[in-house]
Length: 100
Image (tube, rainbow, N blue to C red; front, side, top):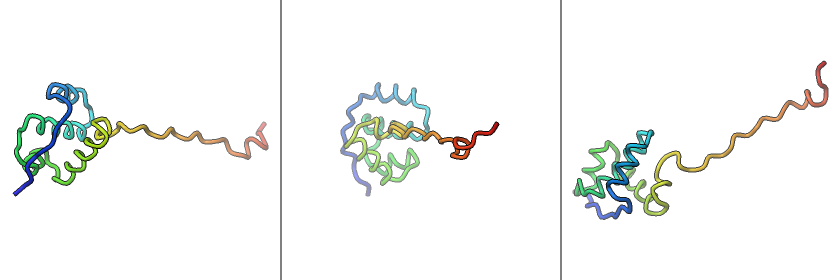
């Protein structure tokens, strides 16, 4: 017996569908589809939804926990700001003893 889904999605089905069409990352599409299925009550149990999307129930629970705590942008992969690449400094030898 699986757990029944008792979760409220803030976005509407049309908003989620629009986000799915715009999304380029496959993993984010699956996360958005998970929210869409919850919103439309496609599946009664978590295990059915997880099987349909090809993920483990625990993985989907972690997605929903992130969604509940921080929102949809944080749940999606690649939405976090990345660190800027460090600029390599020129070698000390070229600064002290320039060639030429």
